[in-house]
Length: 202
Ligand code: ADP
Ligand code: 5GP
Image: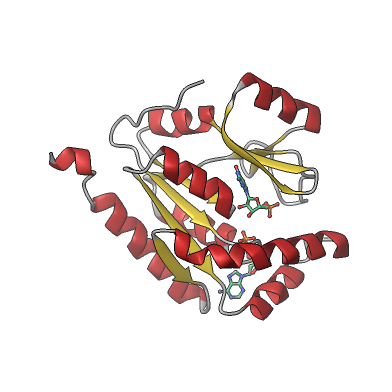
């Protein structure tokens, strides 16, 4: 499958960060605040958390289903983010959101964000969400109470690597005081959406 082309000047807004930095919190807020945004629902083979809804938070697939989608070329990008745990962006999601006339928002780890930015350099903005410190990040992750001890260890190990990516993206958003971070996220979105695409200026 080839990459969907933006219709109606569709843009891509990527929120990326280590697990626990606040992507989900910030992205959910923006989706409630701005009707012109819609979420890129990723596919994953990880177990559904109790509050998560299939088709809304993720498309929850078995490992076999995920492999089949890879073979079909259905993914714009996918990563084995943790051992045996796959996450990926389906081409069909981008088409779905752009066909509705909205801009698309992603909650995605650093490598996926880098790949999507490369595919759509002209109409994407990638925002790195930075925790105040690694210690606070690990504490938030623990307090979220969604992970087993083994899963927490995997996430903390990967977060240490992901924190080194902060300068690879367009913007850095420090998520210390939540209300401040939410307002900054709103401002980043508004500025980006109001900025004409380079091709529109020509
Ligand atoms: P991610 O999606 O990046 O893994 P979450 O949005 O799930 O992160 O946030 C991780 C945990 O930290 C959640 O329990 C969330 O409620 C909490 N959290 C997010 N932002 C803040 C903040 N600014 N201050 C304190 N706790 C926060
Ligand atoms: P979680 O299990 O906490 O929901 O997500 C784990 C990590 O996978 C997070 O960093 C999240 O942003 C990332 N992720 C979610 N969807 C995708 C995706 O489609 N592609 C990639 N590469 N990462 C994703």
